[in-house]
Image (cartoon, rainbow, N blue to C red; front, side):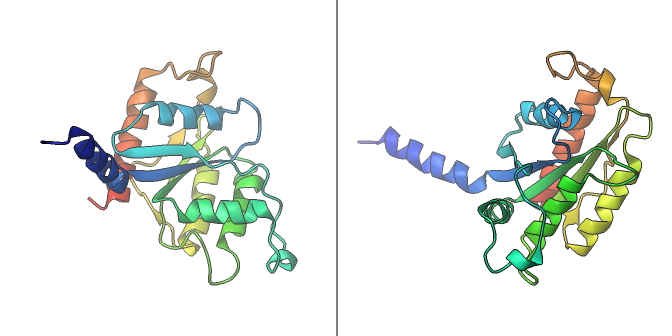
Length: 198
C-alpha cells in the first residue's frame, strides 16, 4: 500500500535541503527605521525556496580583541548565524558618507578571530537607503570596500540606492510604491540566482 505520509516526509526533507537561507542585517537601531521597513518589504515578497530572516545586531557589543579568548555570547551567536546562512543582504542608511557603527561592528565581530572569519566566501548584496535623492551612495560603496576584503561575493547588479525612502511607506510601515516593489522583486530575484549558483 502506498504511504502518502512517507511521500510527504520525503518531500519535506527535500524542500529543507534545497531551501536557501538568507539573512538580513539592518544598519539602523531606530525603532520603526526605514531600513527595517525595507527588510520587512523584502520578506513580504515571500520568494519560493528561500528563507529570509532579520539577523539582529543591536545587542552585539563593540569588538575588543581582549575578549577573543572568552567572547560574549552575542558574538558567538552572530558568528554562528552568519556561518549557517547561504547569503546576506545588508540594508544600510548613510551616516557621514559611511555605514553606521552597529553595522561595521557586526562585520568586525564576525570576522574574528583572525583566520576564522564567518564572512569568508559568503554571498552578499547591498541596499542603501536615504530620505535624500542620493540613496546612500557613499555608504553603499564604503560597505562594499569592507566586503571585498572579507571575501564576501557581492552582487554587482542591480545596484540598489533607495532615495526618497520616507515617501515609499505608509504610516503602518507598508510599502505603497509599486515601482519600488517591482525593483525589490528584481533585486531579490537576482540575489537568489547568485546564492543558488544558477
